[in-house]
Length: 269
Image 1 (spheres, rainbow, N blue to C red):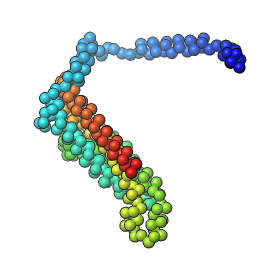
Image 2: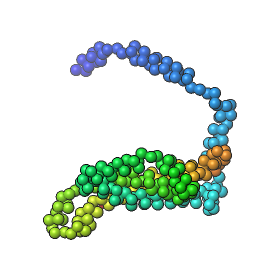
Image 3: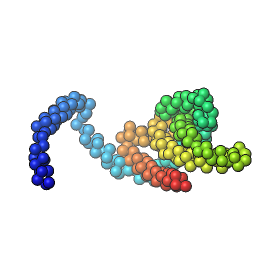
Image 4: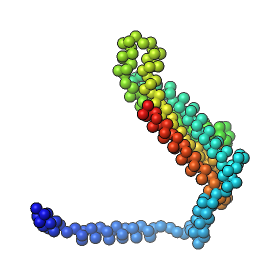
């Protein structure tokens, strides 16, 4: 048996010529593609600048990193967390009635279609555009970031809430109805226990996203830590940029750890 296997293995088609030809063609294409890379914008000091960036990031400004003033990283991170948290709360509250209106099993196809069109329109506009719009209305600051986070959260959270509502187990409601329960009792004991874990998990997940978006929105003046970061980078103050990035990394890790634990607990009951 083993001899037959060895004979069949030796008699297999030899494809090394084809494989070699393919490898030569791929290498040739890579070399040809590299010839199209333009390096006219680079200078001889590019490597030195890159080393300065890395040195600043790995040697952060400790006075800014641990300072408790309004210019310090802790205050800027707190402002960013507040923008993301309050934006998530406001967005989640607004999303609840929209989700019920967009659910086919509760309102019918026509009303649900209108609700979903509204959600699609909200989700189409990027967060940066919302940020620029609200800055024009309210002026730069944390309030513009809060409004932006709230509106951006509505699109995603409403979609997730709608899916949770449409997945309701109607047999529980039928059992409660047969038991003579009132409408409030059916909502209290039949609907809310099914929806609350999904609603809370979705809100926590959106908070993770908002925390990162709030950092980016600071670049356009919507509060948070983004603006000091871009100012430090534009002024080549890499030590300050390193302090801000270090604070962001620690914050994201802590929030990710806590939110993961909460979601797991909600999922497992």
